[in-house]
Image (cartoon, rainbow, N blue to C red; front, side):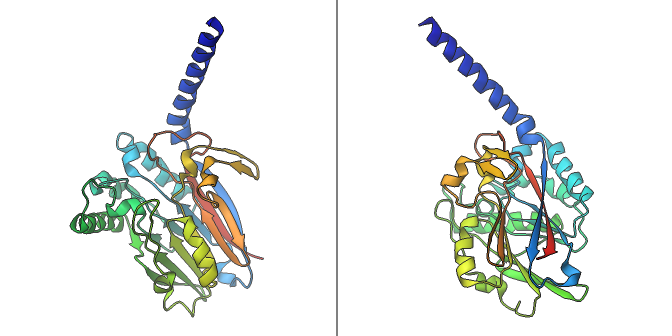
Length: 292
């Protein structure tokens, strides 16, 4: 009996230490990852383009620690981005969570602009007794604050950028619904009118959407997603990685490819549910376009 008590005490202490680690350095220490993505027939003017990809800010995670978001902004700017993408979930439940973070996020600088889509949390479907008018109010309010942050919001639409002599199309497929019943729109709408582009980047919050994209839209060379948070728990050592997220999302963090199409899944910045990150720290992904 005494041995059992000691074992319970040891496990309790270890659990408390692990939680404390996940709550402080695990949740607040940013990890910058850098990945080269090789493309065939990449125009010279797109070679070396540096993309910063962030996702799932869940700003309410930092309502008592605005400095964490300020550190995110400073770190992004220190990486000299050519393009900045955010693949959604700026909030968790209510649009008021955005607070005044728009003034902080507005300080992010990028040579060719900042682009974002709304995630499933950004549209108000997690509000108790939600209805269509509440959803519309949430979408309008969140979209306004994201725009004030200097982002171009892509709601199943696209923007074409002239970078030197190359044309880069950036499209956003707008997610609706709530997990696990997330509704993915037809990317054809978002990609409409991009046939003349040398390359297409598609933002889609949920990586599960990529199964449809690769079957029906081979022109979408690079898809960016988030959503999984890498379950805020896992292990990463070199090329080896593991998280319980893999049992829900076959593509849960990092770079995936099929032929000349790529998907990058960002493991997010904020937290959802338990405010800890163990082994899966908040991520700023640096994606560099290179020739194959």
